[in-house]
Length: 270
Image (cartoon, rainbow, N blue to C red; front, side, top):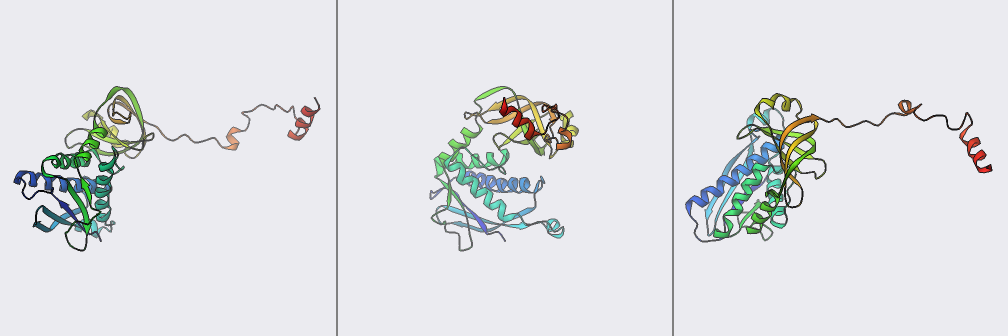
């Protein structure tokens, strides 16, 4: 079972109420989006209950995940521990570099960015799990202004050109815009692919398949693709190598009926 996951909101004795509320909202929605990504269900499998809320300077909130009854009855695995681990792992990665795991969607990344935006004014935030009380451990993962810089490096558009990406089509979303994600085979990173509403049935048919997406591609300063406005989405199955039987006859009888040994001996005598 997952532990309680805590968020320390800054380091100051006092913070504005709206900043505190916004921090909690971004914390909650990042967890919910990771849950939705891991379960491949937009509604997710977990509910999050507040089990700790204290103002010791700075404020700390602790939430505990519980699997939804419908998921539990259906015998689905409890992913609460993985959701917490993904949140903390990605916060740690982004504190050090412009990288993220394959499970951190654009929406969850935006939530982490929003948390990091508050740190210049209220101090670093911290996220951690503990069954031994709410006091942050020494190795708590911090969300800092450097996190914000790394997110900007990761998402900032540097180049735009016509191009294509190839990979597995995953996670269709129609909430705010029509888009899906493709796990780029070259970078092994998710790329957001925007498409026109009339293409929704075609995109649904290709869910989980290997595809090539062609269109206007935006990339970050490292040259890694960020998003693409899809003009074409093509099914691209993996090519199978021909069998020995299928290859038979492709090469002409260059030994003139001799065995390979006889042919090689004849060559050595020349």
